[in-house]
Length: 496
Image (tube, rainbow, N blue to C red; front, top):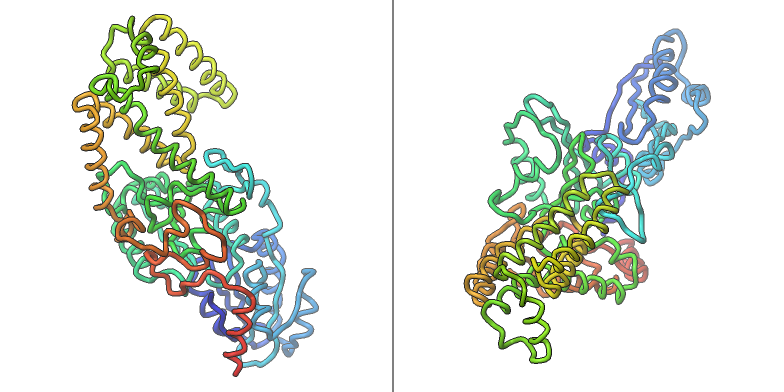
């Protein structure tokens, strides 16, 4: 946790690191006036139609001496205040106030409320692909300025720093890099800047294009950066010390460095009690493992390993496949492809029609396939449960990877049975060990082994235990939060 005494000049100096911080210089009655504000937090209509016209009128008046009280009282806005309190200046500046300072004067600094935080926030998009039962429902939209506004309205901290650049020779797309100054490791920030600076692309459609272009390994089906449209998830990744990338025209953001386990963690885990959250996370991990291996395990058992089937289940299994003319491989591929077709068709159709198609189509086609002896009823149950388990993945990018991984395992199991599954698993594991996200190992904390990071991996430990940022992020400030008693002791020591 960063706590430091500042003066107003230091606050302005830190704010200038952000690309959405603007400074306007005017001369009023011979006195240099500096107007400072965050463009993402102010109401531009009020700024352009009320505040700036007033400043321009004052600039024309050169025949009278400058009086700060008269200047303050004549500003045509309701909330105008003077202060020299650095803490108040910092808070107000990050709430959409305009800061006015004067050259060569020790007078109080002016703060004018031109905020946009209370306007239009609820009009933004609710997350559809990452729905949550509890917690905030706000998601990002296609406007970069609105997304930065949403982020700053949630994280009213002077540490939030944005750097903007333009990419795409034809599209001229605005891209913003966001991080917490003083927390995020500078090496990660520089890595992101260098990779984005090297991009020579004609059109940047979405952050997904940036994801593929800047990733450490483009020849992998696994997502290396966390892509999300949820505001709360991005705020959480920033608080850990990750770097976030926004793109104008995209309703999602990407953050990194990310690890494999990050894609199986849902923000809801932190809204429940730690025992309930851990239970749901373990169920989710088990469901993902089941989704990948269930169909291939069925093929291996039916083709090579009948001896592992219990005697009571062997009879129904043989009876269910007695009239099926196809080998297990063709049987499984037929059902898996049917599920994928229903899923794709449901995703492309309007919501209500897609839901109806998925339910009715699945029931009708499944029942008809069993009656026509194209597949066994036991396999139908296995594939249906496998498809259902795949929907527990919190992020869409990893969900697509899991859908893809099932097919190589099915083919390997049809060729070599259980040995084929083990070989496929070993190949995938070796591939995962080689992957990196912004030059950070993808399999942390499993490899390299980090014992302390297991506190928030497979389970979600109590907040009192997970008060430190992950070691692999190498954050400048490793403590996320501490108890009030510890903070009080630190302050007493500093005062002494």
